[in-house]
Length: 299
Image (tube, rainbow, N blue to C red; front, side, top):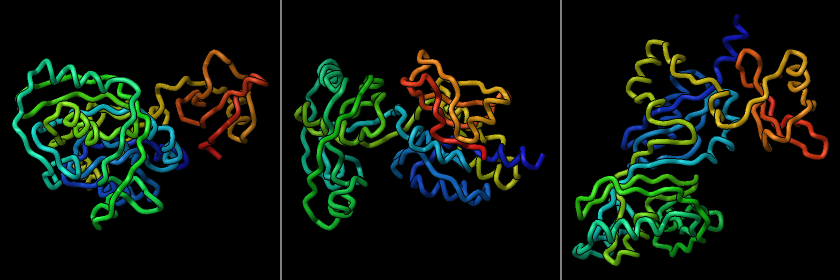
């Protein structure tokens, strides 16, 4: 039973992060409360933003590179008529003008950002330039010249039109800066704009429905009932196909050896025991028609 419990202490905690805390602050609370040192988030959420923060606990941290790459969804509040140097409400106002735009005009320009587009990250961001973080350079008054990157904006929807404010739903690829989107939108509209509110509603397969408010999680740590919020590791990549291993295959995979594969399942799959435990991640080798274990979680 002790071994079984140890295996269970690996998984995902989805937190509804409050405004005013860094993502690292929340990870520290989880580490201290769970008494598990290995924990990390799968994508920073700005201190001014709230919502879905996915935290991997225990051996599940090895899933980070795959979970971090998942799509994200946000609800963003945009202030039209002024632009700032940080692209959000924390910054210095660079320009200010009256807003003479109709809802239809706004919606038309908004839709022009849907698709695969180039986006320049905000100067006040953690992107590194020659080994230094952009926001550190910007704070020191240094000129920050960031390279554009390709992102995917799958859908943009205007939820509320109350000029000079607009509330939009943003469904995008990982690595998208909603602050940059707000700034670029203002530039294209010709009136300037910046982000005043941001709530992440979805990260990968996890939504606000899966998220526990931080206050409630802290209470659970005090009462030692926090494990009820620990989602099994296998669920972290639930949109991946699953290869259910029998006992013989489980032994083969846990020792890093190959098993027969199925090209119809795609390039990557989860290896799952008959009990539903995540055993590892498999990569398909088309030359041999076999699954090669890429990561194994049970020794």
